[in-house]
Image (cartoon, rainbow, N blue to C red):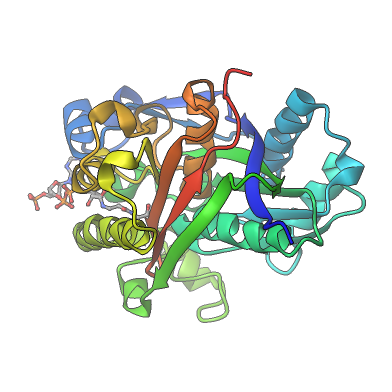
Amino acid sequence: MTKITAAISAVGKYLPDHVLTNAMLENMVDTTDEWIVTRTGIKERRILKGTGKGSSYMAIRAGKDLIKKTGLDPKEIDLVIVSTATPDMQAASTAAYTATQLGAVNAFTFDLISACSSFLYGMATAARYIESGRYKKVLLIGSDMNSSMIDYEDRATCIIFGDGAGAVLFEPNVEGYGLQDEVLQTDGIGREYLQVPAGGSLMPPTLETVKNKKHFVYQDGRTVFKFAVSKMAEAAEKVLERNNLHKESIDWLAAHQANKRIVDATGRRLQLKEEQVMLNIEKYGNTTSATIPLLLNDYENQLKKGDKIIFAAFGGGFSWGAIYYIWAYNGNK
Ligand code: UT7
């Protein structure tokens, strides 16, 4: 029997119009453009404005962008996964609403929540459905409205995060392109260092939790930074080793855009040239589940069929991992 691999056949994206620049942040908290650029590489980020808009608003638009570009009939989509750390609401699936709005009426859906690793884990999950032979079109969307849980008086977090969404379509491939292998890992020690303390089952919302700002992201940046640098590179090296791949044969690194210094360090560990390391953090900041699909959108024109890509991510939990992937089409088709 021919082996089925899961390959990305199209990408799409959505970014809100409102731009929050470093200069604007200088007027909001005690920070400088110079500090932000040298410590993170970020120059600006997008923020979703307006009431009644959540992560699904952006997920739907990223999905529509992909559908428009490909002419795909949404009725043919078998599964819609929305990777997100900021679902629209508790209990109701963000993916279900997104799929219905996209006209994917024959799809089943679920949200995949694993902080900044949500999209990477989503790729591995989408691949399993395709590889089973039973599902032919899996739409994976990473969408996060980080601004909904950021305290714009906290300079340690508000300079980092942005909003956005990116979508990819996974389809079966019988020529060996697509997702080859992955290393996915977690360590629960991490929840102490990166969390939104209240709003979940552990600390349900009360007047006190609101007053004490417990619904905002708390991050011990220095500790998260150290783990991210070592774990992302470790996972990437592991996946290379397992596939007998030399570092020279890798064409691209597509790493979660948490901090330019973390991405650069991972690139150096893989002995990649600067131009092989995908980077767009300067424009969007850390968009959590959307960073990887936004990279694919921005670099699509440069990607060639057969390019070997290492995907890597690190996030809350802690959760992290790396994927070895062979690109399936010429991006400038
Ligand atoms: O995506 C999910 C995973 N998240 C990450 O991977 C994020 C990982 N962490 C980071 O990216 C970095 O740790 C940060 C960007 C969050 C912070 O950079 P850092 O180089 O680790 O800075 P730091 O927290 O060690 O702080 C250094 C100094 C401190 O001052 P003192 O104690 O040395 O006087 C901070 O108070 O910089 C100060 N500082 C700031 N100064 C100006 C912290 N935030 C700011 C700021 N502007 N926005």
